Length: 91
Ligand SMILES: [Zn+2]
Image 1 (spheres, helix red, strand yellow):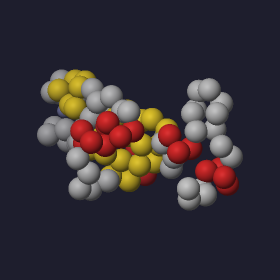
Image 2 (tube, rainbow, N blue to C red; image 1 turned 135 degrees about the vertical axis):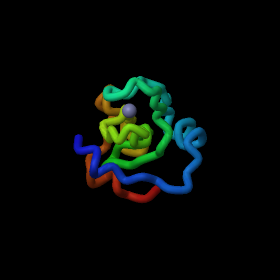
Image 3 (tube, rainbow, N blue to C red; image 1 turned 30 degrees about the vertical axis):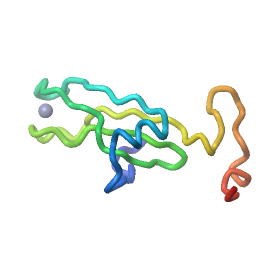
Image 4 (cartoon, helix red, strand yellow; image 1 turned 60 degrees about the vertical axis):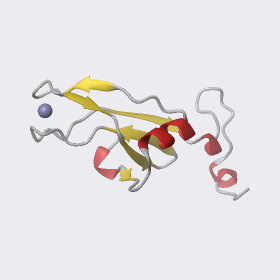
């Protein structure tokens, strides 16, 4: 996954975004400086929805993130996924 292709969702409240997509935010130390980074910026990547920590004050861009699959595209783990074509149908 290329983090530079994550589309930041501006104007979304991170807590509501997390609740809507059932994403669990977490905090993890920066790999470079050890400051705590919290996944707090909503983003979209294809059929995935996630939260990524903003760039660290030390300049490290390789920050933690978490993703889930948008429920509209089916469950990734149970195999209940709709085909890509059907999933684009607006219901
Ligand atoms: Zn840092």
